[in-house]
Length: 273
Image (cartoon, rainbow, N blue to C red; front, side, top):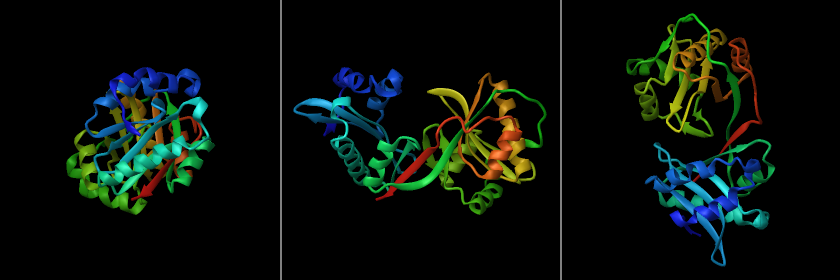
């Protein structure tokens, strides 16, 4: 095992060329991963030849996120993936992380077996929903302000919300994270505080992505509709939600015009270190 270098790009492209029928995202983020001071791209070598890779990155709460675990097609099934994960876990321990986490599609049997074998347990299960931007009416919904923190925290505690989704990543809802989300206008509430949501946009993927929705069915429906309208005003096109759901949440999303689940579930697995 070693840290990746810029010169590994041809090997990375060889390893990832048959992933998702040639549409793997790793080549698109490779340069950013290498330049990230909070992360490490790891390379597994056999006789000096790269045969696997993985990205480990420290999240703001100190959790280590493992992603992009890839093994060359000819070396799959012989334990390379396990070596990568174990090395990522060791990196997380040395970084002082309390948890290591990863996201795996529920239908990816090999990756789920790998995670289970390494001791990772299910922390949450997210589902993907989409809706076209558009709609009208404010529905009694507004952006939350930093001054709303004291009203929001009891709702999170009552609903036992630990994580929120942001694409294929998940973040712990710590006090510091909530304050950051409030400061960046990523939290939405109903005026009576009977429901709330979190929706983010990143420079890498300028799509409005709801990652948390909780509260009353009526309130969640109003927030989901409000997000469609906000996406339309911002020129975001489709709304792509990845979030933990209950029967009430599914009902609220359906009433607000969202379709889903669109793909297999996203399983968030974690290992306490």
